[in-house]
Image (cartoon, rainbow, N blue to C red; front, side, top):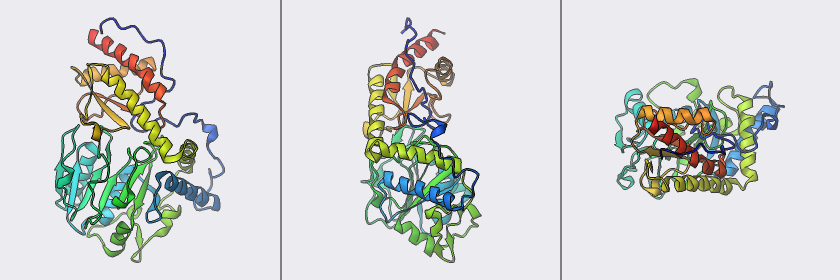
Length: 376
């Protein structure tokens, strides 16, 4: 590795950030619809474009009619906290964490809501024992751990006859894995992940059991206006038809529509999943042929196919900073250093908006950067 030549071919789109993620292939600002810009989101066109965005998300997610889907403030964090603040407290809670965002929900439950949850943890790269979860409780979990590269393998571990609600932070999972919506009562995500959209907006999905909870339970704590989903004891249905709680960015909505229409054009959910799978397979081949690279998530069954986290032999934080900085300077890879709370390593986004050819082109650059930093 000491004499690795500088590769001659750069990835065409070296955007491997795990959020905000790469724009869809062929994206240009000229593709954005402009008629809704400068107009009220409550105007006829504003409502129509918001409703169209919701309809596209429903179609691409294969979301059944039993589940509502709405656009809410605050990205995935706002959507998940909206669900926690409005529905938790009715019964005991189990909060699961195997990476930093799951830990965030634990902190919210323990320190902010003070509901004394059962906390189930696993180290970075691992999953806890899913078979031991008590579904008489409400269960909070992250479908795909963006900062650990660990995901739940499927929804088979969730029983149909559960008493509690399931709350899935699915922001790095939707559009990348098949999701059995009969097992999910609440799900959240943001456009900035798998769709490569803009930040600031969250998406909240509610199954019928979640709606029942909202209409039958009033939390003991105050609810900010942006969290309120119920009026006079009934769900505010307009939220799930494009009548957003606060003012959305119509530019961000138009950008999401471009990504969703692209997803539809390549075969919908199946096409998006296939692209992500191909990218993850290409990166796995790179890792498998290098003894200095490894997967933080050792078990392939629970290894992310979007936010793939890698270990680098002998690397500490300074090494990774130099490694990622060198690749960014060369225009070979942007934003691939692992998350600050995770073990030192690399994190490479393999979602559908990334091209497999760019993942393949990245391999020689990883070799070159590793050699350069080792020799420094």
